[in-house]
Image (cartoon, rainbow, N blue to C red; front, side, top):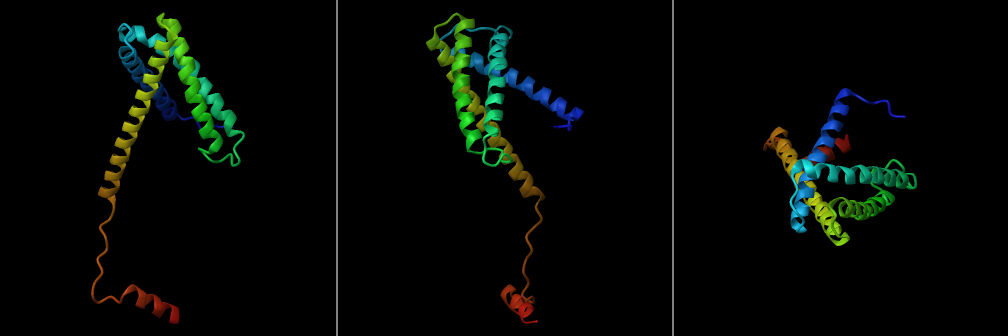
Length: 169
């Protein structure tokens, strides 16, 4: 179905996965710290976060793919069915990852829910921050590269007069 696989796309995908696991592990540690769980090192936290991510990411993908099949227009990126599936997948991710955290951290389910909730909220705040920075950079690039506005001279007829003359002729 899709035959567009370039080495650049593969490298970008692998870099995205590395960033996801690297930043996600830091956010997991922050969630543990805010939920009053013992502080674990980065490399001791990486397998716990990875277990949750490996279980939850395919779940999100399957839910979004399945919801995309029921869109009224399958060419839309974010239709109503996909938005509903995204909300359901976030709730399921919170519940599934909290169960995994409670199991692997030997903590109560309440602490697992706190860690997973804090982690998801921090991830949403980080995504909003990164999106804001990207939008500001793109706006600055557009401001810098846009041509200067054209100044009207007094010798040129007003636009309405030139349009009226073009219509008459």
